[in-house]
Image 1 (tube, rainbow, N blue to C red):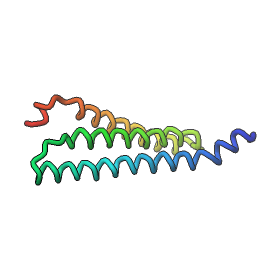
Image 2: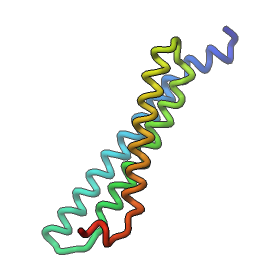
Image 3: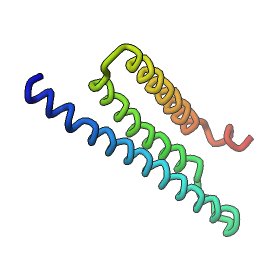
Image 4: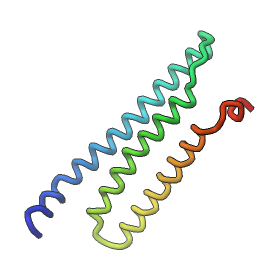
Amino acid sequence: MNILEQGVHIALPYIISALEIMGILVVAWSAIHAFWEYIQNAFFKKELDLQHHLATGLATGLEFKMAAEILKTVLVHDMSELMVLGAVILLRAVLSLLIHFEMKKPEHELKK
């Protein structure tokens, strides 16, 4: 193994962990912010678009998590790990598409 490969194998777990933490923080912040907007809508009669803000945060958080999963493919040692990783990436991609689909719905469909 050359020095570049060793550097990648040493640095990559830290980069992956950082991306996963970023994704978690984005999702958590979005959920807290959306809950705050829900409280304002419910008790102070404001008309804030909390569904859109939450969906945007979830989609962004999933993008960070998918970036971490893609980088994990560099560290895969055998086919079973690759299959599990592929399944996780596929599930996250489907979730991301569903969230983007929900964000694109016209507002009159959401009111039904």
